[in-house]
Length: 330
Image (cartoon, rainbow, N blue to C red; front, side, top):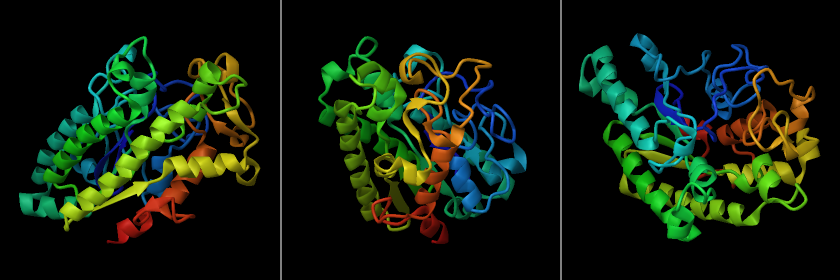
């Protein structure tokens, strides 16, 4: 998911290509439906608040003038690391396209601040948050009717290919001034209502072949943090263990206030997992008790927990080597 930096430009990628600019999406969000795939705030919104931001980060398509200096959201629904990811869902901007949009923004930052030196100093203090890879599994590798990747690559090989392409884009961001990076790992896609509906015999047991592939990617991504930190003494990369945080929540859902962890609050079919929420559909009334909002995406209640633990690690495994709170202090 590429998403807006707090205090500057960055990225957020969402899980699926359906639009979310209609109710019931945003039913609990102050601004109503905005394209957020949730009933309310996303993880990004939660972290931005914790960092002290008063306003939500605007999308690249509308950000202009001085507003750019407060951060830009380059998210594109259904996009992935791979160029072809999500193409069955229509138009989207891949990671490389999002990076090109960021590069366009930098020229505006230079103009706003007066010169390249001042712009570089400003950008070095910004936090760039990047959460990519989910769509490369949901809308590519584990969709064999549309994509050949699962026949071309083993899970290990596919993770390597993704990380190679990820590395190229991170390097491009670094070359254009980024110095503080938050790399968010892939969650337990095999536990989403969509996968439970399609591939779980009882509708409750997570799909291990998918989660196993996700863990391989996350291991490579954590290694990439070390690689970049060792190669760039003037930059700091951190990894957020979204998979582990999610696993922790589901291992004791009641302790986190959840009663339903295997179905969407709204949606269609088994587990409400066949497709995303329909326009004007009436969602569940007890949204804070649901882990998932729709077939793929967490509720605001889940996003609050993930965001808080990303910002200030509750467990030593939540963030590596430091959490976002400490990154912001550097």
